[in-house]
Amino acid sequence: MKNNKLTFLHSGDFHLGSYFYSSDLPVELVENRRENIWASIESLFSYAKEKKTDCIFLCGDIFNENYVTLSILERLNSLFKTVPETKIFIIFGNHDPYSKNSKFKYLNLASNVFVFDDDNVKSFEFEDFNVYGISYTDRILNKSSYFEDIKLDRKKINILLLHTDILMPNFNYMNLNLSDIENLGFDYIALGHIHKPQKVKENIIYPGSLEPLSFKETGFHGAIYGEFENRKLYKKFIPLSSSIFTLVNYELKESFDFYYLLEHLKDNVLVEDKNNYIRLTLTGKLPMGFDLDIKGLEEALKKYVHYIEVIDNTEENYDIEKILDLNRENQIGIFIDKVNSLNESQEIKEKILKYGLNALMREDS
Image 1 (cartoon, one colour):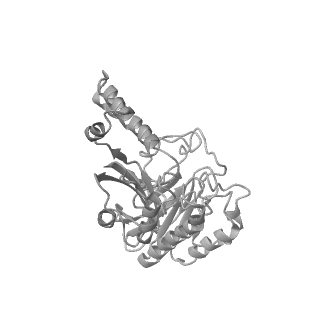
Image 2 (spheres, rainbow, N blue to C red):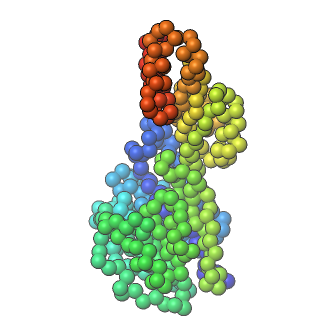
Image 3 (cartoon, one colour):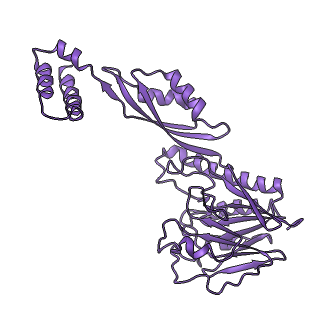
């Protein structure tokens, strides 16, 4: 703590060793996604080094125990050593529990790394601040109480690290409510487990996953940078992730213009200096007989994004009156007349016409 100021970075949920089974991405992108995670972690430590940050709080699920290798953890340990003046505090979550078989125990950690190795509250005490934390030692952490023996030194800054879901309490993941922790007296509560960045209270925060892992984790991702100055907390979100996942809904108006779509993406969607992962859903009505080449569209857009998938939810825009004029004496015209005479809402009749004409006109082609 320098000049009555304490600075920190709050992060977690790296999920090193992820296999990305649930990411809906092609297999060939998996290795690339792993390096995306590393790029983000390296940015985190570069930022800590540049700012000469006093502390880094890593709040669990740093890796996936079932898939991580010792070489992956050694690479992480090497990054710890790049910031010898920064104290690194680590708790373990449900994906990387500090069990008797944890691979993390094989690392020769530097003296600036502080590990919470128990599923009871422990603390590391320093001259001007204390850091408390609880780790998982199994994939489930469920106790009747956690904080009854805590006695905070109010002369110091007190920080608590937890890996839990206080937004939707779950018996497997500490089963804590906001009311269980907000009145404990901590100056900052650093949370992990939820992958969406969100502020629960001014001093109770989820930074989210450092690197987004799938299209379920859209928007900017990164870490929280905080400062305590004269015990007052200042903080901001730092978008450190190497990638950004974006869901785009794009409505076509009677026609499709590739370059208009491209300009829309460039102006409103694509983020410079990020690996852009885009899921583009096309909606609207296209002229009858207009065939969208989805694969061709994806190929054309690949040069502008890291990954794109296009979902075609467009509909054919049937000119019913024109079709009826051309087909009055055949089954298509008879079908339209019968539907128009039904005692149903216009919405129902339009749906019947849509599906019926699709079938009849395919037969007629």
